Length: 142
Image (cartoon, rainbow, N blue to C red):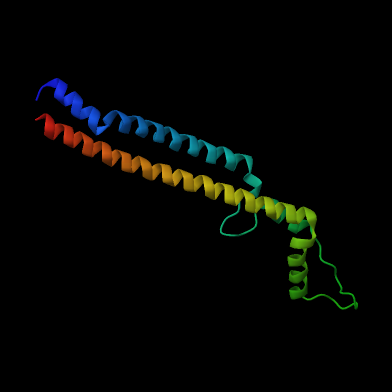
């Protein structure tokens, strides 16, 4: 097989396109990793782990002091104080804002991670296709 035939096969297989797409996907992976890191740095106070409160929410909760007695003058129990704190998550505007911001940051990070995972899988697929293309060219090239 002469060089012109090899070049024709190379072009028909689309090896240049595969290599170009692989390069672009590597660039996407790098961009998404940088985006995730930057977003994490910008929103450090709103990062939460395993559905727990972020540091911004914890700071506001720590600043809240439940009343010592109820409307009837009875001393509040621990359960009553917990209920009061849970109610503050909705009624206290600053706390509600911080909780909403925490959820937004979590959602955005999940979205970035999903895009990153998809890009990494695409890299793996393109590497496999590239390997098959190379094997095909080697086989046909003799």
